[in-house]
Length: 562
Image 1 (tube, rainbow, N blue to C red):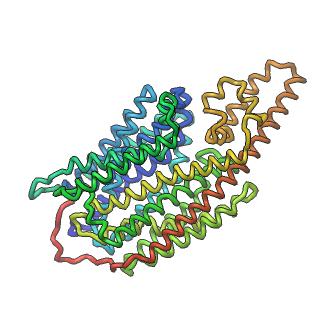
Image 2 (image 1 turned 180 degrees about the horizontal axis):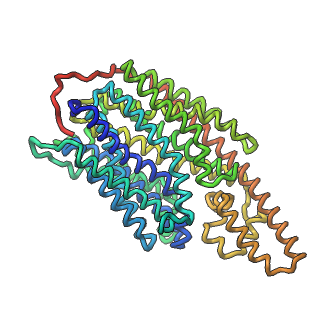
Image 3 (image 1 turned 90 degrees about the vertical axis):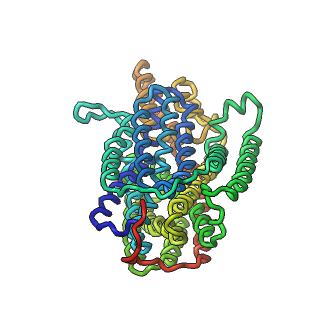
C-alpha cells in the first residue's frame, strides 16, 4: 500500500492513470466510427470482423494475466508496459498498409488495453483505504461515461477529411490520437509512481496463463463474429456453424478442466481457485457478467437506434447520448462520495441495478414515432442507475481480499464484465438479426434492393441479404454516397426521364428506410426485454451479498509496494 503518500502526489498519479484509462475507453468507441472508411480503403470487407475480434481477444485474455502479474511485480511497471504496448500498437496500426497489418497491430494494441484496464482500477486500492476508494472509483466511472460521448464525436470528425495545421485527418487519426496522450501518461507514471522493490523472486504460472489464454481466446471466437471469421473454413470443410461452435465450446470445456487441475497445484496460480469459495466474490462476478451484457445491450443499441430512427451520423448519435452520460457522471461522482461517507455499498448496488432495470423496461416502449425528448428522459435515469453500479463492482470485490491479491481480484471482476459484454454483443446481435429478417421478409423482392443489386459498387458495402448491411444502407453517410452515385448516373439521361427515374429511386429509398426502421425497432424491443431481464436478475443477486463495512485508513499501516 501507498496510503502514506501525500495527497498531491496521489492526485498526480491518479490523473495519469485516468489518462491511460481514458485512452482505452475512448479507443473502444472512436475506432468503430472508422470501420467503413477502412473497408473502403483496403476493399476487404470479409476481413473486417478480424479487426474487431483480434482486439477483443487480446484485451480479454490479458486482463486476468496482467492482474496477477501486477500483484507479483507491481502496478507501476505493468502500467508502463501496458501504455507502451498500447501506444506502439496505435502508431503502427495507424501506419498499416494492408488489412492484415491492421489486424496484427490492433491485436497488439488490445494487449496494452487489457493491461491498462486491469491495473487502473487496482491502483486505487494501493493509494487509498477501502472507504476512500469509492470516490475515485466514481470518478473513473465518469471517465468511461465521457469517453462514450467523446469517442463517436471525435471519431466522426477525424474520419472525415479535415485540415489541422498542415495535416489532413483520416481514419488513421483515430489511432494516432492515442500517441500524445499515452506519452504524457507514461511520463507522469514513470516520474511520480513509487519504485518497486522485491523481497523474493516471484514464480510465474506459465502453464496456467497459457491455458487461460487458450480458453478465453476460443470462447471469444465461438461467440463473436464466428460465422464471418470462419466463413471460408466452413465452406471448404462443409461443417455447419452449429457444429463448429459445439467443437469450440468443447475445447473451452476441456481446457478449463485442465486449467483447474493445474491451478490447484500451482504455487502462484494466475487465478486462485480458492477465490470461488468466497460467496461474495461468486455473487459479484455473476453480477459483473450480467451487468456487462445488459450494459452493452443498452449503450450499443441506443446509439444504433438514434442512427436509424433519427438519421443521425455517428458523431450526432454520440451527442444524443449526453442525457444518459450526464446521469452516469453525476451518479458516479455523488454515489462515490456517499459511499465514502457511509462505508456502505450494498444499498447503492441495489438502487443502481433496480433503477437501471426499470429504465431498460421503459426503453421497450420506444417506437420510431417516439420523440427524442421521451428517449432522453429515460436515458437520464438509465445513466444514473448504471453510474451508481459501475464503480461499486470493483470496490465490493476489492473489499473481500487482502492487499497482496488486489490485482487478481479486481481483474477477475473486469474479466467477467468483459465476457458479459462479449456474450451480450453476440446474443443481442442474433436477436436483432432475427427481428430484422422477420420484419423485412424476402429482401431480394424489395424494389430498392433490386435496384442496388444492379450496381457492382454495392458489393463493397457487404451482402445485400445481410442484416448489418441493410442497416448500413440506411445510415446518412451511405445514403448520401448512394444518392451521389445515382445523381451521377441520372445525368446521362434526358431531362424528362431523369426526373421520373430520380423520383422513383427516392421513393424506393424512402420506402426501404421506413421498412428497415420499423423492423429494427421491433428487434430492439426484444433486445431491451432480454437486457431488462439480465439487469433484473443482477438486482436479485445483489440482495444475497453479505456486506462488509468498508474500512478506513489507519496511520500505522506499513507502506508497501505499488
